[in-house]
Image: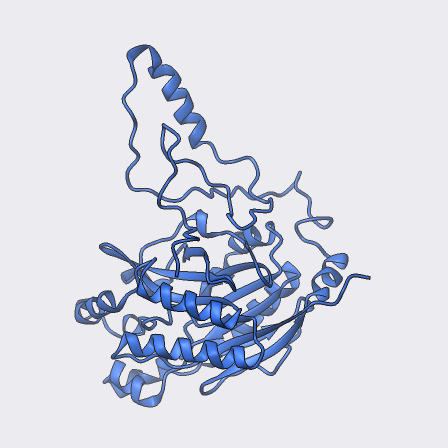
Length: 367
C-alpha cells in the first residue's frame, strides 16, 4: 500500500476593498497567513479578487460604465509586478500553493486571470478565462488554449477554471486529460441569487466526479454597504446578493465540510489524495473509460498572438521557409501528456525558433 498523503486545503470567502487595491492585497496576504496558520498547504481565492470583480458591469448600462471601467484599469494587476511579488513571498513563507484570481492588465486590455503560485513562491501558471461571460465581455479580452494547462506543484497536479468555464465540457476535459488531481474553481459570488449557488454546487461536484479530482471552490462576498455603493438603484440590488458556495469536494463528489454560503471566512478541509486513485479505479474518463477512436479533443495549446513576424529568406529558401511555417501552424499531436513544471506544449512562435515571450508560464519572474 502507498503511504497516505493528506493535503489540507483552504477556500477563502472574503470581501475586497472596492476603494483601495492595496487594501485588497493586504486582505489576501492576511488570509494566506491565517490559512497557513491552520495548516493549509493549498489556498484558493475568488475569481478576479484583486482588485475586485467588475460587479458594475452586471448592473450599469454600457454607456454608464466608462468611469468604473477606467478605475478597474487603474487598479488592475501587471504580471509579473508588485502584486505577484508580494503573493510569491507569502507563498514561500506559508509553504503553500496559492491560486489567486486577478484582473490582469496587459497594456490596453484587461483579462480575467488565474495565477498559480507554488509553495516555493514560483509563479507556475498565468491563465486567462477563455471566454468572458455575458456582461463580462464589455470588460475583459479572451484567453487562449495555452492556459488550459495542469501544473505540477508541491501538493499535486493542479488545474484551474473560472466561473462558467466549468460549463464548457471540452475545457474541463483538456485539464482532465492532463491528469488533474486538484482543481481550483473560482466564482465571483454575491450575484444572481440562490439559483447561481445551486448551479455552482452541481457543476463543481460533477467535475470532481468526472475528473476524479478534488475541487476547491472560492466565491467572493459583498457587504450591504458595498452593494449600495455599486448599485444606487435599490430595485436592482437583489442582483448582487446570493450566489455563494465556497466548498471543498472530494473525487467521490462529497463535500468535505459544509459549504459556506453567507458571510466571510475560510473553509478548511483535509484532502486524502488516495481518493483520486480510488475514484479513477472505477471510472477514469481519460483512461480506461475513454474511447479515443470514437471521441477525442483537439486542443490548440499555442499562445494567442496578434502579430506573426516572418523573417525574410533568400529566394531559393522561401519554399522551405513556407513549408516550415505551415508545419509550425499544425496543432501538436498530443496535448494529454504530463507537462511537468514547465507545462507544454510550447511552440517557438517564431520562424527562427526563438522562444515566444508571451507564454502563459512566467516561472522565475515572480518574487
